[in-house]
Length: 268
Picture 1 (tube, helix red, strand yellow):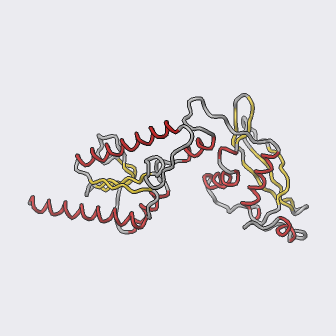
Picture 2: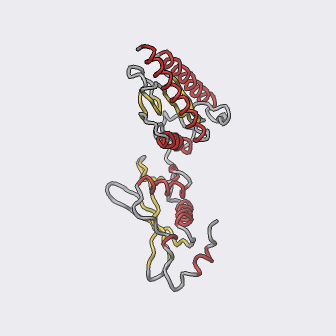
Picture 3: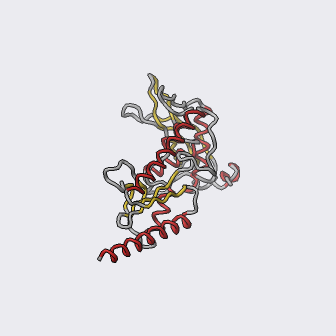
């Protein structure tokens, strides 16, 4: 819960605000800093500044403390042709940096400094918010993939990441165990049509239905082609408990390894 402004500011009459109210932790990556700004602004698509002539820049909020006033001042900054313009937004008085960033973005919107970048004519998205979500949807190293891989690695399993099980076949699996020939796919609930979590889109419904059905058909074809090539396919939904999913993968991998070893012994 955010501290009320009056309570947070009451202790700053004789001292500067605490670092947690305005200063970020040192050493954070650009990706982490951008994600912080996205959260505070309500999405990356809400951080655009109209530069004119059809040009847009992505802005950020900067928080500063002036020792003379012992108050946190917020500025909106962006890049334009090598320059870095800034607009003063006002004072923010909350007890945490996240709350002060959010308050500053609200000021920027109220002052009319922000503008949503229009969709391209050939964009699939029905709105800037949908486009931002699509851009943020990663096809590699997603959180469910990273959690699953971490658990598998802790169990001593070694694997390839984002690799083609069959080199001449243009199908990439998320986790590949080459010796036992096990290919693991971590499927997103939306893009692959999860029966539990997929919710039909109210906009461009026919387009999205066709798109998802096409993904499902490709998934089925991928499974068939890999099995014909002697591979075992394991599919994990992103909503699955990672510990249970990892246990299922391990059973398949170790079972396939045992079967392969027995086949080799029989061949000898």
